[in-house]
Image (cartoon, rainbow, N blue to C red; front, top):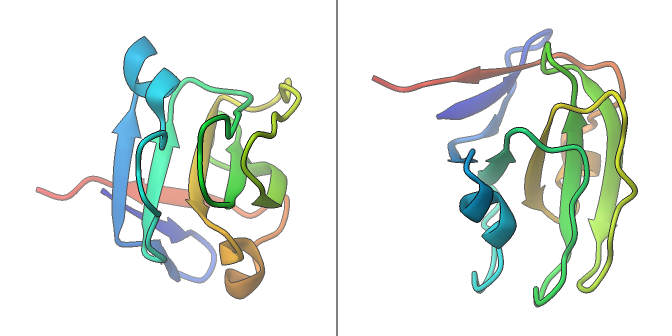
Length: 116
């Protein structure tokens, strides 16, 4: 899967891995050495995340049902926890500083495209 900004068509991540079971969401990025710039983990359903046992910072993008950004957390360091966001239905975890580099903001609409 890939993720794009709907308004501009800008590619945000070339490789999106879906975590949609209890165990894949629980594990998340734990055990991964790093998350590369063009990669994302899509946690669905999800409205809050943690970075326990991780060794690097990440950016966290909270999305509503229509994949509109409802909250952004930049450079979330290891061993941190977000409060649940009521409007969020899923979360994209990306490498740190992605939000600022791509100039994402609350209200932006994203599109996730499944590859054949």
